[in-house]
Image (cartoon, rainbow, N blue to C red; front, side, top):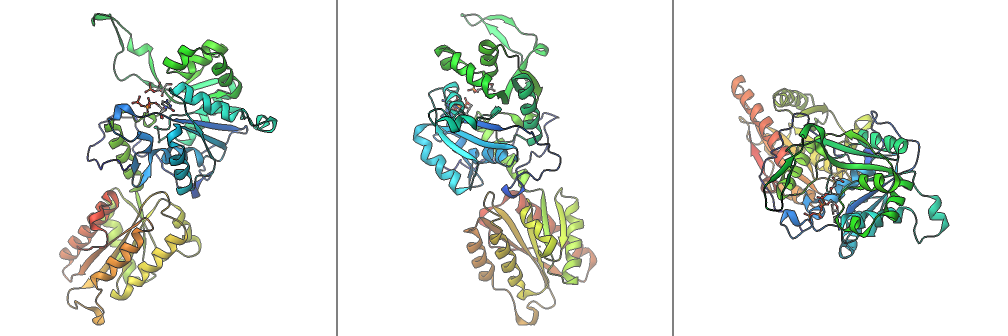
Length: 443
Ligand SMILES: Nc1ccn([C@@H]2O[C@H](COP(=O)(O)OP(=O)(O)OP(=O)(O)O)[C@@H](O)[C@H]2O)c(=O)n1
Ligand SMILES: O=C(CO)[C@H](O)[C@H](O)COP(=O)(O)O
């Protein structure tokens, strides 16, 4: 089921592509202070019933895994964290119902219901809309019908709350709303013989993307009235709203990260975005020692040039415990070789906070050793110590690495060591190399 590891780079050079779409942890649900809340009921249909033929892979793309987690779970989470979204219907092929139920349990998704899909995208979406309408579930279910339904392809994982807000508000006002993007290529019509018939004036046209929003009544009626041919060959929900309900959709330009994972290279791009997002920040824990704090400051300065945000804290007590809920990686700085116990405490705190449920978390133990005194007070760290701790942490989805910096009297040599440690830190957080887990690397 794991999507083969890929080394391809994303080839999207679009200048308005945000460098880092946000992937939130469940604990951050509803806490985004820039987000506004809608004051009417909104539910979501995520069609995920396709086979992903164009990827050329056996596994449907929505179930391909990134850092141990299926793509569909990232998309679900992008909606689940939005406090004003009341429920999510995921539509999957009958044979994948159990798999989807397992994913929901494993990643503790809370607002999600699974319903069986159909043979085409429209049929799957229609099943999702009917489920939201409480079809076959009696009158009480009908009362719970949402005002607005957002439809979003399960294979567009990077949708953000502020854009969902715009779509939901416009859908409530206009009856229908959808995301658009400028066309990348010119669209041409061909003759039956394969010659150019005519070309469209590119500036007049837009690519229709997702999410799209509809009042429940509009999308429900559209699916009640549309034809078998629409169900079989149609690709556009906004078109159904126009044709069968006379509703002209409001079109809103969305960010380029709304793109749909369609080909194998899109899976590589998605993985790269996910990794970038999870590699932006780390928290250095010093254990309160002044010596460790000095080393932490030096590391912070050196890392500054490496596009990694670092914050130094003495421990994770009191207010600092909020770092356990953020998307931070952790660096434990120790100046005493006996301090593997500090890492053990950190790991226990992270496990107790269920911090690595959705993403593997990187913890780096940076240990200062004196070159004059190879074993401080005779208590040298056994390599097997960190290795054992790392294998235990791995079972909790935490990747533990070690870096040893040698204390040097010569300033230049010391600065070189700190810079090296900073570079290793940044690379470990970015690449999460499995083969280096439990190793004590030398800086
Ligand atoms: N019978 C179908 C077909 C598609 N979809 C969903 O619609 C979304 C967008 O469709 P597309 O990218 O075409 O997905 P696939 O049909 O899986 O891809 P392909 O056309 O390459 O087979 C996907 O989340 C897909 O799972 C669906 O729910 N039910
Ligand atoms: O962007 C869309 C407009 O509604 C749909 O996602 C798209 O049309 C469906 O994708 P595909 O044609 O690849 O099945």
